Figure 1 (cartoon, rainbow, N blue to C red):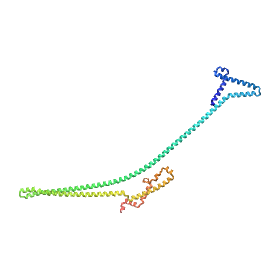
Figure 2 (figure 1 turned 30 degrees about the horizontal axis):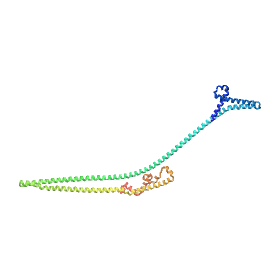
Figure 3 (figure 1 turned 30 degrees about the vertical axis):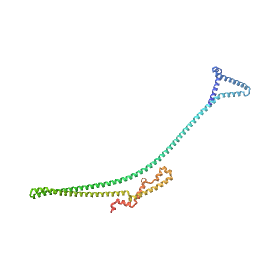
Figure 4 (figure 1 turned 90 degrees about the vertical axis):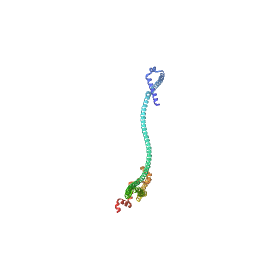
Length: 384
């Protein structure tokens, strides 16, 4: 609004100076609307000149008229240049305003950038905090899952050790029974060879006896034939005597086979009795082995007592740590030592080197254990 008013004032001043410089000659060259405007300006100028002339005429006769006229001319000149001065002053003020506005906007822009950077940093920090919280939750979940999986692994390890013990026991039983079966097979083989030798010797004796009997019966008729009187009696005796000797020969054969059969049956019965005794002995040995695996010995019970004492020490130590962690919960949480782990029953996997050494010391503190070890290490000295 101010710049438009200044522009209008400048136009009027320029028109006045143009009218003054051009005079009536320029009026003829101006178009009709502008000429009417200029004519009105000339009329006003003439009136002003007339009024000024009258004033000069009136003031010339006065004492200070010349001074008043001079001041009036000065004021008139000042009024003529006032628009230019005001315009120059406004231009300078406008330039100063634009410079100040530019510097202010630069400062505002700089502050805006700083605030935007701070807002971005706060947003990044907020996102980082949210991400950290999410990662902490995931870390807690993974820690709990790791503890759960650790417990499962320990449980499965215990089951694996138990099944390994059973498998070793079954392997020992299998090896023992295999050795017993091999020994029984060797015994049966030796007995079979003995039976075969007995059979072969019996058959050879039977064959020798049969050959001797046949030779006896074959030589008898020849002697009787030489002592006979006529040839008919000799032939009839030679025909009748074999028929009479056949039952005796069959009786000898049947008696020998029956004797061999009885010997064979007695041998089989004796072998069966020996096999039954071996089976009973194997059952007794198996029962003893099972009893050794099922019933704990005195040394095993003492070892279990030593382990239980060490577990009691671990439990006491964990209780003290649990009370300390409850007193300083934040510190225990920062160390990642959960209360569930502290409150659990200690297992063999939780034993430290000191705990294991203590178990060995408790075990070696018994005179019975030392005597047992001495007997096992030096059997000759213990026997003496």
